[in-house]
Each structure stands twice: as structure tokens, then as C-alpha cells.
Length: 239
View 1 (cartoon, helix red, strand yellow):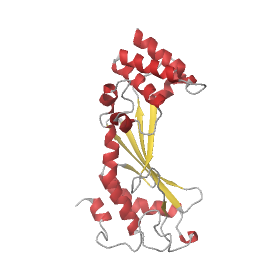
View 2 (cartoon, rainbow, N blue to C red; view 1 turned 45 degrees about the horizontal axis):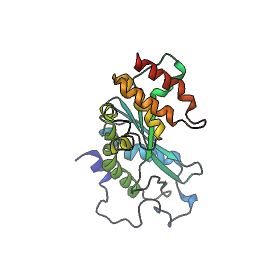
View 3 (cartoon, rainbow, N blue to C red; view 1 turned 180 degrees about the vertical axis):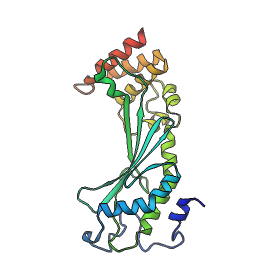
View 4 (cartoon, helix red, strand yellow; view 1 turned 90 degrees about the vertical axis):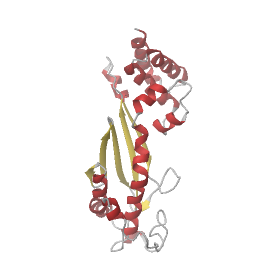
């Protein structure tokens, strides 16, 4: 039995007194009775962090990281400024292995994709902090079970990211592979990432095709700052 089963298996057969999630604790107390962010951080460190470490995540409190296949994955608990609620961000950071003569455009090598952990099919979800002096097992169990069900499935999308990007053609940017890799990113960003990666991977024709596609999609002032980068990609790939 793993540590998640030991920790998050508490009361698994016991029917909760109220709905888990957004309505958790909502009808049982006023906001003033909820614990503060600092107090909840201690609960996360004590009750949730051990299970994450068994899954090779490092960190403490509200921030955890794991490197896998050269990709940096992060879990970040984020409190709402007004208090009472928090969300859990799942972040992937890709660093493209290509440097450019112009140091000012090397920042284009790091790309961040972020979404939120949710107990349903929505894209955004906020939990309420537990009631002061109340039982927080239901909330801890819910988050722990979601981690078991969704973390590996979500982050495994980038396990073969280099070969997956290399496989994409200019008309594949709305495919299932592309949507999994570049969730939430614009068409222009996808074109730019593919052009940079293909240049590094030695796929010169693809690098040029994606760079020209990105240049053609530049409208008004959007993306104009990327023109020097796109021109350098085309120049290098053409040499």
C-alpha cells in the first residue's frame, strides 16, 4: 500500500456530509471561520507532501517540482488575494535546445504551459480553505485522489515532446498531438515553437515552413517583435 493510499484512504468508505469542491464547507460557516493560507500550507506539508515525494516530486508547502525527460513540471497551490479560497496550478516548462546570436531573443527558448487541477471537466476551479478547528480530511482526500488520478496522465503528454513536435506538419497545429503539447497557446506560438525546435533537430525545411507561416500570420502589432527571431531561423535553416 503506497503512502497516498495510507494518507488519502482515510474515510474512503464514509459518505461526506456535504459536497466536495466549490461548495465544500460553504454552507457550514462564514468566511471568517476559515483558516488562513499559512495554516493551510502546514496541512499541505504534513498531509499531502509525503505522497507527492513518493511520486518523485520535490518541494514543500505550496510549491513542488519534478524533472522528467528534460521537462520541468510544477505543482503550485495559489491562494486568492481576497482569501478563503485556493487553486492548484499544473505547470510545464519546455526549454528548446537552440541558442541565437542575438541574446535578446534567446528568451524565446523557454515556453510555459499552465492549467489548473479540477475535480470535473471545467478549466478553472477554486477550493475553500478548511474551517478553523474543523475536519479537513475530506478536502485532503479529494486533492490526494485527484493527484493520483490526474498528475501522471496530465504530465505524460510531454514525455515524448521532441519527437512529437518533429512529427508535426504545418497543417497539424490543431491536431490532438498539438493540442496536448501546446494546450492554451495561440496558433502563432505553436508555429514559433515548431520552427525553433525543427531548426535544432536539423529539420531545416520544416523550420523554414513554420517560420514563414508564423510571419504570414503576423497582424497589426501582434507578433512583430518576433520578426528578427523568425528571420534568423530562416537564415540559419537556409544555410
